[in-house]
Image (cartoon, rainbow, N blue to C red; front, side):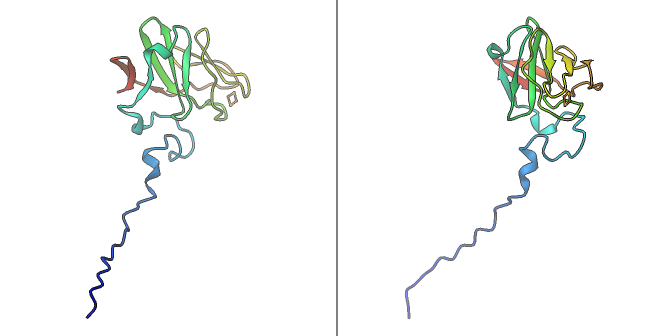
Length: 135
Ligand code: FES
């Protein structure tokens, strides 16, 4: 009689297919015209990193955060509504897309210069401590 106890364990729990919850725009398929629910509760940036009149591009979340006026923070999808390029860092209350020259208003996301005509989808945010959080 052998004393070998192999303690066989099968690790089958790797549900590697659940990537959609993390990758923001990856699972939506075309358009991306609405806020991804997976961003809710996420801290997008620190308030100190978002200058008045400017903004911060959060590349891994595909989000751009702006501060059009002192203490007012806005967040938008960073994917241009023209052909889906990532927009550039906002300056002087303009969110530029360098692919074809579109511009978006930093306070509303509205396209102010073509070829894009549709606004950048926006996210509702609030300040919590020193962070800008999606609500
Ligand atoms: S993709 Fe932004 S202007 Fe064309």
